[in-house]
Image (cartoon, rainbow, N blue to C red; front, side, top):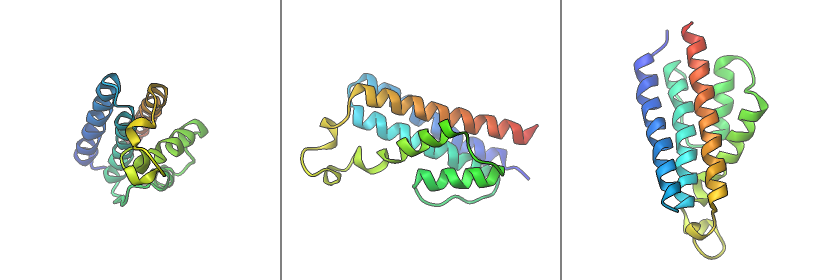
Length: 137
């Protein structure tokens, strides 16, 4: 039995993170745009897992991606796995000054990196939406 309400609750937050990421990128805060992209993908994957009753835990996007793959009974497409792997690396380093030997995250990320992260997040979110639609069919 699918929990559409729980899926939509989490999915709405994914949409908000994706929108905020775009606004933040346009504002020049590229590290935060990268973090919000990771969050959008994480929230979307958790939306699916909550929706199927899988009870996701944690913040490791790679592990959550594996759980998503297990929930649908097949591997994610390689392009999606690549996006998940890239985004997963943005969870800590984009916001924690002690994740770098010197400087701070705000000086470490470029507009190009933010654009790529947001594209990756859009791909993950679209994949989750497609998988959810397939379950409902």
